[in-house]
Amino acid sequence: MASSRGNKLKDIWCKTSMDREKEGKGIGGLVVSKLDPVEKISSDLCVIKFCRHDKCSRHGFLSTLGLSADEMVVLSGERPVVIALCTAIISRVTETTLDLIVESDSLPRLTTSDLVLRVDKYEGYNTTGLLYTNLARLMSDDGHSQKLRDLIINRTKPRFANTMSKGCIEKVKHIFKPLNKPQKTAILKVLMSQDYVLIRGYPGTGKTSTIVALVRVLQTLGRTVLLTSYTHSAVDNILLKLKKEGLKFLRLGRLSRIHPDIREFSAEKRTLDCSSVSELREFYKSQTIVATSCLGTTHPVFNQRKFDVCIIDEASQIVQPACLGPLFSAGNFVLVGDPKQLPPVVQSKDARSLGMDVSLFAHLDGVGATYELNLQYRMNSAIMELSNVLTYGGALKCGMESIATAKLQTPNIESVTHISENHPWIDGVLSPDAQPALFLDTYQTPAPESRNSSGLVQNEGEARLVHIILKCLIKAGVSSKEVGVIAPYRNQVMLIKQLLHGNNKSEISQVEVNTVDQYQGRDKSVIIISLVRSSREINNKEEELLKDIRRLNVAITRAKHKLILLGDRQTLTQYSPLKTIISTLDKKQAISFECVPSC
Ligand SMILES: Nc1ncnc2c1ncn2[C@@H]1O[C@H](COP(=O)(O)OP(=O)(O)OP(=O)(O)O)[C@@H](O)[C@H]1O
Image (cartoon, rainbow, N blue to C red):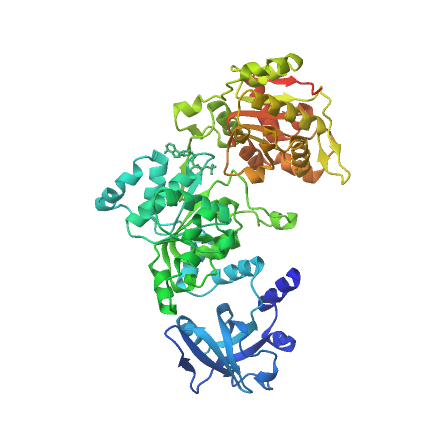
């Protein structure tokens, strides 16, 4: 079903109107009728009468071509080609005319002289259809699309105003107070921007806090804001903080996808008092902060109005055609992300090799509008150092001394003593003077990788070791909510979960076990990473995950106070990112030692 719907949508782009007509799915060669072409039926809607173009070679009655009253259609230009000018409802089809109900705002686009049109049955949009629409809009003739083409395709240098008025700065001074210098600079640059700004936020550097401050600043200065991200949870993550700051906003999207604490701001709830179309229109026009997902920009409000600034969070994880959607609705845009963390998820290797996983952020990075947030408030200095060696070359810095020196708190460490008698290595992991970042080498341990019945790789020895470490951490007084386990392979995640969930009520079963992708944007006091591979055998797909610097960077930067990497040094040092990490830990005597999972 899904694929047939997708194919039908593709047909609007790929099939001629003649072909669509033969299938009963469209009519081409249409022009606005010269006789009574437009009838106004309300303040917002009108009926436009279409007929065949004089020179159209197709004959036969329009009423026999398969389209009928009340059906929804997409109107496009056939000559010149302009895909998806607007949607319309068929009001009447006669032998020679087709009457369509359209929003009055669309009228100027449809009544352009010499425009020959086609209509296609609207069969619902899926994501792919929307992505194609965004690309088609980028190619359209209007000034805004042309500006976006210049900036995105030609990578024209974005423009900035030279100064900002003192009055403006005075008005927002109080919002700037708690921010650090890079955060302030980034916001000032947005205020001076005439095209776009990229805010590259390293892990834990306060991207969300900066967005929240930026929205407050823009609102104080009377500018309108469109706030988006690819996922609903990322949008609501910021909205929850805006709500805390006492800001009012409009959240578009299906109620079921909106965080329960944000639903009071949904369009559904906030328009309850509107009793006419014009009241609704006024309501939507008056909102200064509107938030939705990137795919939610199909809402009619985006045809009616533009925003001063569009902010897209987690932009380095969004494929370009999806990221484009909100940009058509704002004069200026801000992308927030970090191309050195997870890229957009693109399953197809061919698509990746053609650049589908290059986000708009990564594409525009380096053109001259990137501002960095590099002061982080998450990791202690030992963990941060690993990320610097792997990725940031020393640019990542601690925002506060107390963060740099923070240690894992283990108030009941004495109760672990009897376990560490059997497992002396536990002392090296958990004692108060143990290193904050560790690599446990399982090379001489019974921890070989194996395959489950479906051939997926796993490592039972490592899973048992994770279990022992977790038991000790919890006994030592660390809350299970503050510990996270990461594995690169889903099967290992399952295996560890099964081991922990033996007793559903135990605290250990509350520990979160997941792949890296599920952890982006979050942190835990302790992170244990089970690296699984312990073999020279090569499997390309499995290798890809271990070679991926960005994935490893995200995994290690989730830990605030303690990071424990678990794996077979001989195997893992074949992969250059892991080799870098393991040799950095060696240099610092932050140990690589043998452990025996005998319990
Ligand atoms: N200027 C600042 N001074 C002190 N603390 C700050 C500052 N900016 C952010 N923080 C703190 O840093 C922590 C991380 O902030 P935030 O959640 O905004 O980061 P983030 O960059 O969105 O994180 P992620 O890397 O997970 O996306 C929060 O506890 C926040 O209060």
